[in-house]
Length: 299
Image (tube, rainbow, N blue to C red; front, side, top):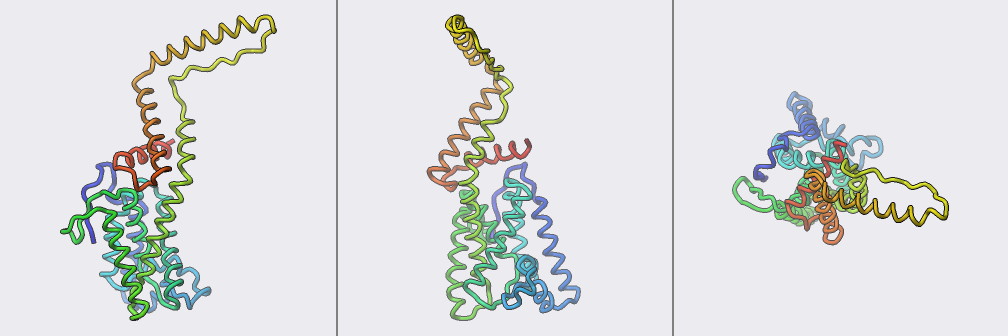
C-alpha cells in the first residue's frame, strides 16, 4: 500500500463516514473470529450472482465481508489513508453515496466478466476512493510500501493497469481474485466525478453570483413620470447613478475587494475545468474549489 505526505492541518484524520465504514468492517471480522464460519458469513452477506434475487441484499453487504485479517487490513488501511480527505472535501452524504455507487460498480463488472463467482471485500469501493483522491489531488506525493515515492495519479494508474492485466489472466487461469470488481470500482468513480464536475459548474457559478454583497447600495426604481418631465428626470437619474457608482468603487472595503477577487479566481478555475477538465487544475486551484464548496455548504 502507500502512505501520503501530511495533509492540511484542518483535515481530520478520521471523518464520520470513514470511521463508520471501518467500524462495520471490524465488527464483521470479529463475528468471524468469534466462531461463525467464514463460509456461513460469505453465504449470507457475500455476493453471489447465482443467489439472486433471493439474497438481493448482498449487493450492498458483500463489501463488509473479508476472506481474512490480511484482506481486511489492506482495505481498511487504504480507506484510512485516502478516505478522510475525500470525505472532508465532499461531505458525509456525498462521500457515503459515492462509496456505495463504487461498490455497486464492482458488482456490475464482476457479473459482466466473471459469471457465477462469489464476491467479498471492500476493494471495489476502496479503489473508487483511491481514484477520487488521485483525480482531486493528482500531484500529491505518496510512498508505495512506505519506501518508493510516486504521484497519486501514478499510483492509481499503476494499480488499475495491474488489476487489468491480472484480471485478463485470471479469466483463463481461474485465479480467485476479483480483479474486475476492482476495475469496476475505479471506472465508476471516474465516471461519477467527471459527470459531477460537468453538471455542477453552472450551478456553482449561479450560487456564487447570488451571494449577497453587503457593500452594494440599494437600487432606486423610478416611477412613471409625465412625458414632459421625463427628459430632465432621466438626466438627473443618470447623473446620480454615475455618482453612486463612482462612490462605490472608491469606497470598496478590503472585505468586498477580497470577495470580488475570489469570485474572479473561481470563474477562472471553472473556465479551466470546462476547457481542460478537472485533472488540469493545480493544487492551489483545487484549494479554491474546496474553499468555495465549504462556504456553500455552510450557507
